[in-house]
Length: 128
Image (cartoon, rainbow, N blue to C red; front, side, top):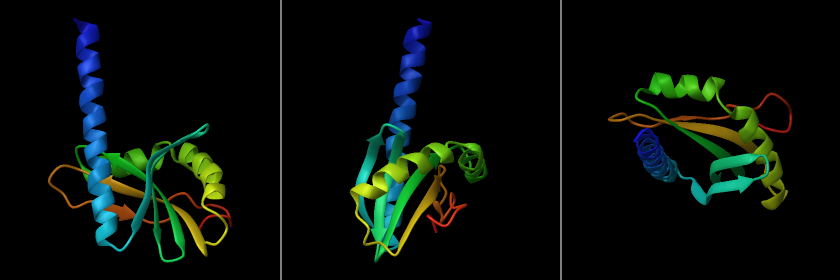
């Protein structure tokens, strides 16, 4: 019984995550971004969205929580190192013609407008 409950919880979380990624992709499109890929897996981890806007390549981590504050906290303490490693591997796939390559986060919460945070993981000169 407990195993079934945890499996149902995982399935609900998976559906919620996919819906949050759909919301984030729509939000980015409204802001003029073109979505190049979704849920791209590398040996270092997964990047939720890969987008471009002009000559800027953006790797996007989507965080869904009950509130935007909780989503921001999850993005701050979360897996940005994982996303950074995965983005480093993926950047090669998308070529060298970009003026800017950066990692963004889109925070999603129920009944709130999404919040797009630009350049959340850019400590060195490689990432804007």
